Amino acid sequence: MPEYMAIRKEHSFLDMCHTPELAAEVTLQPIDYLGVDAAILFSDILVLPDAMGLGLSFRKDHGPQFAYPVRSSEDVARVKVPDPRKDMDYVLEAVRLIQERQAGRVPLIGFAGAPFTVASYMVEGQGSKDYALIKGMALGAPKVFNELMTKVTDATIAYLNAQIEAGADAVQVFDTWAGQLPQHVYVEQVLPHVQRLFKELDRNHGGRRIATIYFAKGAGVWLEHLSTIDCNVLGLDWTVNLGDARKRLDDRFALQGNLDPTTLLTSPEVIRAEALRVLESYGDGPGHIFNLGHGILPSVPPAHAKVLVETVQQYRPVGR
Image (cartoon, rainbow, N blue to C red; front, side, top):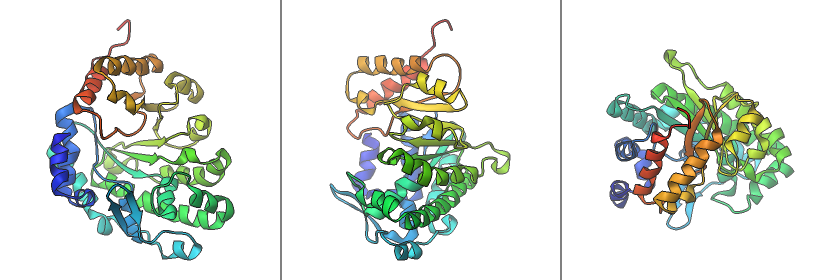
């Protein structure tokens, strides 16, 4: 959005994440322009490992990088579990500002990275194409891997509960790199940490019911295993048919997704047709939160996103 780019020209990405006024402004921009039905906190999944002492920076054209990657048991020992109320107060202040300014217009979704996805960046030290270091740790040094996953899970629980306390109406956990793992590694070494994370979230804070969402990209083949997670909503990427997922999960979860983000680079006509295809694939009944099957691409024209939102909001199933 031009409004976002105007701010981005004056401030670095991390400065925007660390400045509650800017994070609140950027969070609310798409609500005002697109008219979507929920806001999602402007932040990044890597602010948590940064607060754990890894030294985050963003290199131009190269993405995130950590100064102190975690490769051994000694490295894990030096990583701290931060107190989000002290070490990440800028995120919590942004949540409070957003809720104050938008005054209940839409729910606010807070978020964090899932333990494995966050640990991937911590071990690799940056983004990766093959995840060789984190996979090597899981397979070759499972004790160290479990130590790291336990510490990241502890930190994530505290961080998300602090967001809830600050006023978030829902929290989403992004497991972007879960699908990179062999199934047995995910089920045996990752899933137990995800299960514990959701069990320990404060889902009835102050009498408010907090929605909890888990999104694992590339994990559609594991739906039966994901169904053991105590969350309200499962997010699905675009490789999964929503109707098939409903049957496999026996309608025990709301489903979020799952339009291929590249669709928004086409034309309004194609966007409408593909959005309707996703809506129809879910079938009749409640429990579908329309969303993309992963993050929006930076090159998407804002007007195309608006076409998508309007198509979904105007949709009425046949016979209604």
